[in-house]
Every structure is written in C-alpha cells, then in structure tokens.
Amino acid sequence: MKRTLKILIGYIIFIFILVSVAVFFPPKVSSIYLSFAILAMGIVAIVCQKQLHHGMFVEMGFRLNRNAAIGLSIGLLFTAIVLILNFWLPVRLGLIEIVLNENSPAVSKEVSLMLTVSIIVVLGGIIMFIACLFGEELAFRGYILPKLEEIFGGVKAIILCSVIFGLWHLPAYFSIYSGGAAEQGWTSVAVMLLAHGISVVPVCILYLTTRELYGVSLYHALVDVFQYSIVANPAMGEISKDAIYRMEILNEPVMEIVGWGWQILAIFIMLGLCRLVKNVVISYNIPATSTVNK
Image 1 (cartoon, rainbow, N blue to C red):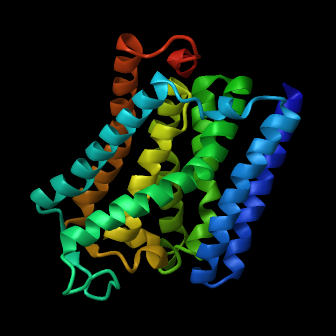
Image 2 (cartoon, rainbow, N blue to C red):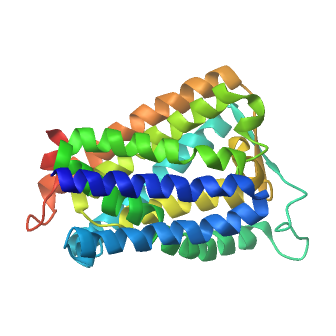
Image 3 (cartoon, rainbow, N blue to C red):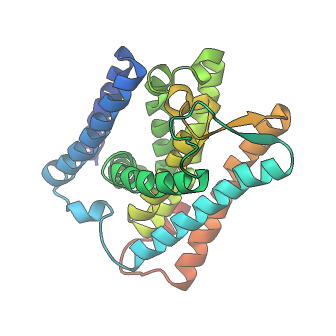
C-alpha cells in the first residue's frame, strides 16, 4: 500500500510539472505542447501500471464487454442532459443568449452552419475522444482514481481525484485559457478550478461503476468540443475564441445559482443512472459501484 502511494505521488508530481511548462509558451504553442504532454501522461501511466504495479493494460479501462456499451450509453445520455440543462434551458428562460461569432474561421457563407457544426462535432469529437481515451481520462480515471480507491476507498478516492484534476488545470489559465478567467483575478481562477474539480465527480462515479474508459472519454470529448469549438466558454479565453457561437450572459446572478446548482444535481443524476444500471443490467464479473458507497 505504501509503495503504491509513493509511486502515485511521484506520478502526480510528474503530471503537474509537465502541464506547468505550458505557461512559458504563447497560447498557440502551449496548445500544441499540451497535446503531446497529455499523451505522455497516458503513456507513463501505462508504464507505471505494467512495470511498477505489475498490472494489465486492459485493466485500466480498455475491456470490450457489456460494461463498455453501458458506459458509452450513459456517457452519451449524460452529455445530452448537460447540454439541455446548461444551454437550451437557460436560453429558453432568457438567462443567456447564444450569438454567432462572425470572427470565427469556421463561419462561412458558402457552407451552412448546421453542416459546419455537424462536421466539427463528429470529426472533432472523434479526435478528442481518442485524445481523452489515451490522455487525461487514462491518467486520471484509468490510473490515478483506481490507485486512490485501493488506498482510501471509493468516496475518498473520488474526492481526491477531483481535487487533483481541478488543481492540475491551474497552469492552463495562464497558457491556453489566457484571456479568460485569469483576467478577472485569482478569485475567478479559484472558482473555475473548483468548478473543474466538481465537474468530474460524475465522471469518477461512472468509471467506478463500469470500470471502462469509453463512456467517460466520450462525455469528456463532446463537452470539450462543444465549449471549445461550438459555443465559447468565456472563462476558457484563448482556446475557445474561434468557436462558432459565443455565449452572452443576460442574468449573471441567476446563472451563477443555476451553474452551481447543476454541479450538485449532476452528481445525483449520475448516481441515479449508475444505480439503475447496476441493479438492472450491469455485469457482475468485475467490480462495480460498491466501493463508491464505502
């Protein structure tokens, strides 16, 4: 147990150093650097799993079984719920307005916006899915989360993994996210880091339920493509400035309440989905959600 913890701490220090280097580059260079850095995180996680923990690669979440299909289904359904409650509903309630970004290189009079959005979602989603599957999700859910669970149990593992994931994004606010929350000061950055951490609690729950990376990677990929390329998230700054649409908040106090309310609601929605799956159709030949409730 102590050896596992030492290896895990070393790995966490490694990924923090890796991402911190990005602050020394301009945003566009940082984006390229981080693409390779995140892939390196995944590769090193696999090396640690095989060489230091003597575990199997497929055990990190790459089994192709019923749980993989279940995870993908939940990931897709949860993504739809996220988009409905965070964008469609606030627009209908007059809390936000989605405005076309005329400066976006993706906007063209020759190609319909619907076609452009569809191409970006499909192609961008596939590319981002692969990047998440062998990068962030492999590192955080496939490696760090199970090792934390082994040491501390399910609930504490989810909390710790979420905290680490949130803090790991700090350098991004001064590199690829420059021009976003960082311009409003450290309070805004701290709030966004907290939001980053809480936002992956449902993802951690899904992983500990299905023990596969496909569903969590699909969700992560679609959300990133949407907020980076479809509707710009103002807090993300540089990385989403070329999105096809931009979001204008019409009622900031209410949207703050709605935003944090969603963060909490999302956890219970995912718990409900996973509990339903566990009770009805999940395979019991691999560990399931019992550790989450410890």
